[in-house]
Length: 342
Ligand SMILES: Nc1ncnc2c1ncn2[C@@H]1O[C@H](COP(=O)(O)OP(=O)(O)OP(=O)(O)O)[C@@H](O)[C@H]1O
Image 1 (tube, rainbow, N blue to C red):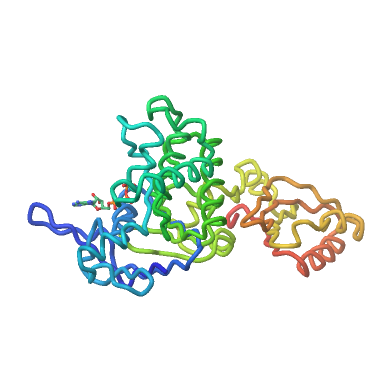
Image 2 (image 1 turned 60 degrees about the vertical axis):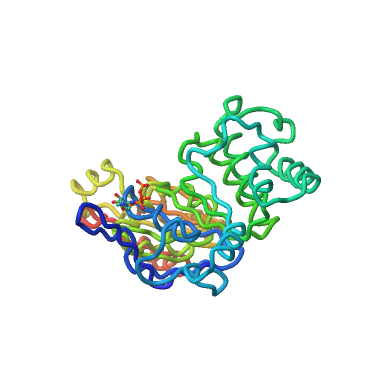
């Protein structure tokens, strides 16, 4: 659907050149919600602007449905751009036009007859939940409502692709959640492919199927949400995952260990998939002469699949602890926590 085929973008300014996007190879499949995460300056905005040719690649190509965007004639490019909607962090609405006319604007530009515009705008305003706001102006709306108008406007021309440039970064957490839910409906009900860029890992966790991590113009890691969150490889990815998944050992536990490492049996249990719902810890307590003391942890959901970590202490005779460990290892990932290794 969208293929970045070894794309590089170099900016030239004041006699120096700067690689904002460096040899990016990325494929986004039809109907997928794909998130690109990175810190400020990583090259995300440049990357997303290459899709609708707001930026031209210096080398490599961006292919949409196997067609190289840079090879299109002007009229073909206009036609292609109509298939790509875009929403922005600061909404970019026309302040002098009301909600109805903001959404109708791209249709008017495309020369769509007034009657058709009317039925399309009515339908799309209902979809985003703003039917009762059609005569209001942007400055009468909340941030969440403005972004709903932005989404309605982007959907007006029935695009195949929706590009989201930090679409929830200006919104509070609750409004962010409602906008992300709306984006899921955009994909589910209209089968639109969504490419979003963000610096917030909770956005990626909430809504994306696939994620790529960008740093200094390069993609340093990519995969399904589940794979990247449960097994991040690059240090930057680990840091991003840590912002939403508490997996660090708290200081208090590390202190406990450094004082009495030999006498404590503290383990990190990683729950994946179906094991999360099972009463494994109570089975250990009942089956062996050990007590299980949960010290720290978090279980969450990734794409509807439970996932998480618990830090537990096992107390009892050495031989019983060994048996309990053996049992645990048959169904979960288990790693001893030491003062140094965490
Ligand atoms: N038109 C331009 N000319 C020169 N350099 C540019 C231009 N646009 C962006 N850059 C540089 O390219 C790098 C990547 O910028 P870009 O905006 O793509 O990153 P980003 O990850 O989206 O960051 P942010 O979230 O801060 O926008 C930055 O160092 C930026 O200064």
